[in-house]
Image 1 (cartoon, helix red, strand yellow):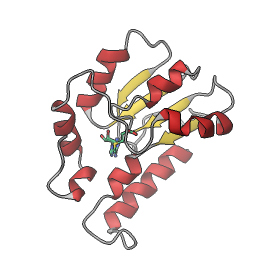
Image 2 (spheres, protein in one colour):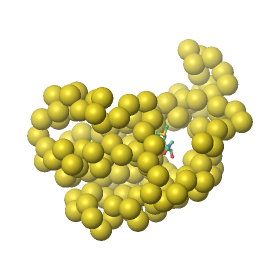
Image 3 (cartoon, rainbow, N blue to C red):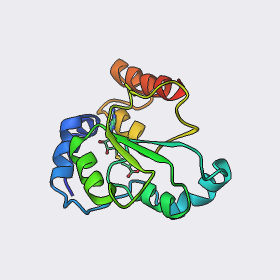
Image 4 (spheres, rainbow, N blue to C red):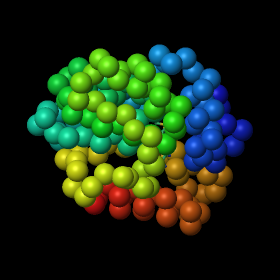
Length: 155
Ligand SMILES: C[S@@+](CC[C@H](N)C(=O)[O-])C[C@H]1O[C@@H](n2cnc3c(N)ncnc32)[C@H](O)[C@@H]1O
């Protein structure tokens, strides 16, 4: 496990590229919860399995793969780490039709307005919010980054 020397590094692309480059291409790691733990919520709030789903900051989580196995075949995954996107493309690119992987920043999505039915963020905004400062009084940059993600997703 590649832990940062300071929490604020969780908010940098350099940290994530470095972290993923230490992992084997086939590694998976799920932050906070696995699909098994949240599947009941996803099935309740996303009953239509043909929904077009945007996975924000996918990392090397197995969430998209597990959802695909559960019938959600229309998932577009993005992450700003080129390293993890290459790894995930390598792993799933040819064997998961309907699934896409793109290097992209959640604060600047290059999709058109209203391109998705659902957006899922598991741990990505948390990473952007990591700082050394009181979480109840975040730095202006953190507020701006999170606001930009929400604004982009709501387009
Ligand atoms: C804590 S990990 C969560 C990974 C995965 N969603 C999970 O549940 O295990 C945060 C991920 O968000 C990505 N990330 C952080 N900030 C991002 C941004 N501004 N745009 C795109 N991806 C970002 C990181 O590269 C990392 O893969």
